[in-house]
Length: 319
Ligand SMILES: C[S@@+](CC[C@H](N)C(=O)[O-])C[C@H]1O[C@@H](n2cnc3c(N)ncnc32)[C@H](O)[C@@H]1O
Image (cartoon, rainbow, N blue to C red; front, side, top):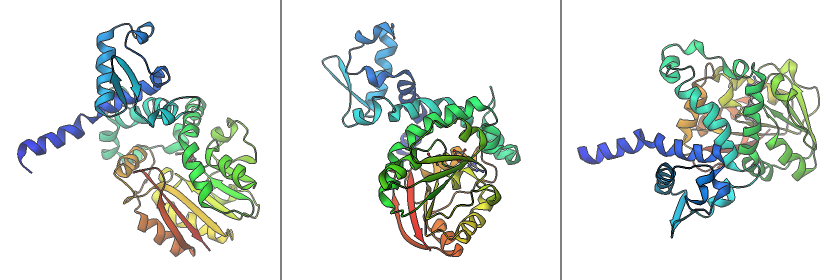
């Protein structure tokens, strides 16, 4: 690669935040629900047509919208993902722009959080510290629910539970609700107190306070299987192996691990980094690492398949 090509490729990455910022801002402002529209149609909310047009041009450059005779529309099939109640835009415009992005870049005014924790990793407080603020926990979980509706359906389709399911770190239950409704089984979620205390009810789902790190806080029931969706990314790496062993000891028949696993797509490292910035002792795992930990714990890996395109892998293992 010559210097000009290398610089072009570097700039594409270095300035990619501008496109990202434009897409996330459109999500948080609900722009996608207002399309198709001309910039004049949007002037009630965005009165300066110059800046509105420039914003739309950035969105067009990254393939989100398209312009025809002055009318801007979402590129199909993004209209399915980005519009309506509980859409993926609510996730991008909620947790991602308001919570994840500033935590990674500017956790405190004027402080580059990544630069800070690279030098002082012990400063990370994890989800416990983050969710000590009830409002933050509630906002995060409302948005996470929208983000996990589609992966939740994918997980539910991939398993065949014949009895109660334990979902450790299940949040407000997008995955659990999908499993409960598809298979007509009870799902118990164990998550941090501020999360379960604020969770809206879901049919077939029980919300129980506890910690994935402390089996003494898990319910006593006999579970057919266990779901860990994004849990390994959310807890220190040193607990991964013991956690899987404790679950095997609970005699579950199957386990479904859904997470960012290296080798599972071009956005995996980026998403792992977003967690590494605040989860103490975070360790990025490869698809093979997860399989090997499951095998060491006593499980037999049945399948590892991509779930969220370019981001997550779903690994299913049986005892
Ligand atoms: C990225 S969210 C995923 C939520 C849900 N599993 C899903 O797929 O939508 C990570 C979840 O892990 C939970 N969590 C983090 N540390 C935990 C712990 N020690 N015990 C239980 N849950 C924990 C967080 O509260 C949060 O709900």
